[in-house]
Length: 222
Ligand code: CA
Image 1 (cartoon, rainbow, N blue to C red):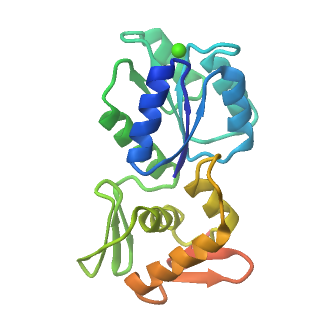
Image 2 (image 1 turned 60 degrees about the vertical axis):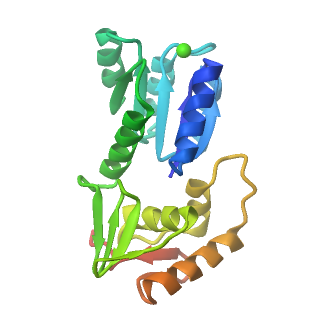
């Protein structure tokens, strides 16, 4: 899952970037409102962490522009401690959640995961696909109850397909959501990871849909 962190305070931006990378997110960072606006308009983020007090363009204006233009990614705003008016303004501008500063990064990560799950219609932390169960909190996959050992990239790819259960996901989309902007992307790597996942999970779970990409689970009914 790929997230955008918008924070102008360098120390906090660095800390958030490190914490989210450690939690296996692909992370881009913006340090002012204009950069944030542009990245949110042009890159497909799974969620955004948005500070409100920003140089060049304030966070609320950025959020209003995104929503007016139809960008629907989940947005969690960072507000001043006790600033209830900021929270109300933020939610009314289209934010999905908020955290008051200072906050524990574990809480931020838990809230982001919940926002991403809900954005894909999964209320609970467990995604089930036949014999395969994925626990998005523990980041574990089991087949018939037996744990499957996965690398971080293998898990991230599987979790992305699981969040889009029954839908074909193209290699381009996978690449865009598994790697940060500055990462040297190579779509051959995806094929290698999928091959390894198939060996570990058994053939047939991850299907190749000709011309469309990969799909986990039976086709979604409309
Ligand atoms: Ca700020």
